[in-house]
Image (cartoon, rainbow, N blue to C red):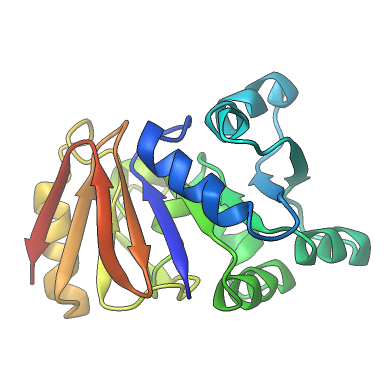
Length: 210
């Protein structure tokens, strides 16, 4: 059983999706990893990720700042978690630190073993087979089409859909990749995919067909 939660903006979890994620993660060790880009004040910011999960019984968190030289100890701690959250921020950097690295391989292994994975904004964009990064979200100012984590196939994700006016970019991405379905996810909105199928949404989601 695979569980994937994708959010269009920054944390916190939306109420219902946060509840489902917590219920799924509670079935094992009840420890949740939060992968993020380290910046000043990050300790205080972590409460945005954990607040809704704590309301539903999760209290044990492993905060994992992303960097080039990941340690064996960090990978072992990631292996021991029963839930994984990939944060938001610079999508290109998240992709560089996670996709095609030992961290990404661990995430895929845990995900395939039933551990729920949640991605916020950048974390959502890198999760599918195709990682599509719009011009507004990278220093090159170009539409980037890159390999993603491959947790889910046959979909394209567009984050901050309304705020970034992403409809034309999502249509372009569907044509270029020949992927059948695109999900434009607004801030404060999210999707839950169970075994590759969409089973629950919260907030404003635009579904587009290629």
